Amino acid sequence: MSWIMDISKHDINFKVYRQTAAPNVTGAFWNCVNNGSWEEETFLILDRFLDANHSYLDIGAWIGPTLIYGAHKAKHAYGIEPDQAAYHELVRNIELNPNILSKTTSINVALAASAEITRLYTKKSPGDSMSSIIPTISEDNYYDVRGLTIDELSEEYNIRDVNFIKMDIEAGEYYVISSMQRYLKNNRPTLYLSLHPNILLEENKHNPLSYDQVLNLTENLLENLNFYKYIYDIKGNYVDKNILLENKNGGAFVFTDEKW
Image 1: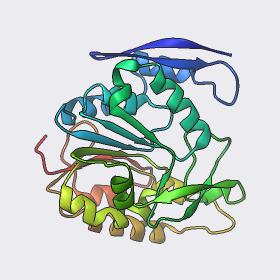
Image 2 (image 1 turned 180 degrees about the vertical axis):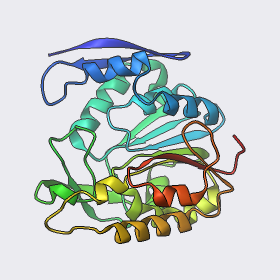
Image 3 (image 1 turned 120 degrees about the vertical axis):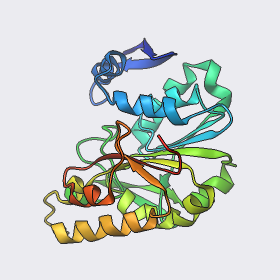
Image 4 (image 1 turned 60 degrees about the vertical axis):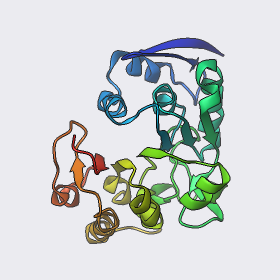
């Protein structure tokens, strides 16, 4: 059973389904969006960087909080979500908002380093926002999804004029960013990137990663993004890349050529 819930965030109002049956119990989550206790800084960042003349690419759109919000502000919003349970709910939520239907595209694929069938691993249950192309503690729980590179994705879905990308893919960023380097360098969209070293450091009896290995992955990721002029934290403070290297708990950072 579910019913429709009104979401009010800053100057944007939209509707979503509030679920009442496990595993998709999202009513409490949407309450947090409404009252500002879920990633308020993320919405402020969208306010800062999105505009009606450029498109927005949301990689890891989940059930739609940032995609639907961003679609109200951007020229067009593209949401990438490989988790089938989350994608189903994402589509239902978008359809509740006819004013953004024509400028919102949801895509059920995994962004990957190559175009091939990709394993998507689940932690607890599908749709719980923690699915990842990285196995870590869930190596035995996966299903296959279609993978596309950023260039193939852009070509197939005619994604143009993107000036802002949000990426939150549960440690997949360490293995995807290098394949995006040419696209990012050529197009220079602001990149709002969530880093998850903590996920890579989780205990995994099949393929444990040491701190040094995670550090090497972070160094490689930052090397692929070194053409950006600035790195900021979620509050707009300038960040030196050494802060990212020393951070074991993860966090979100803005890579951009724009002065905040």
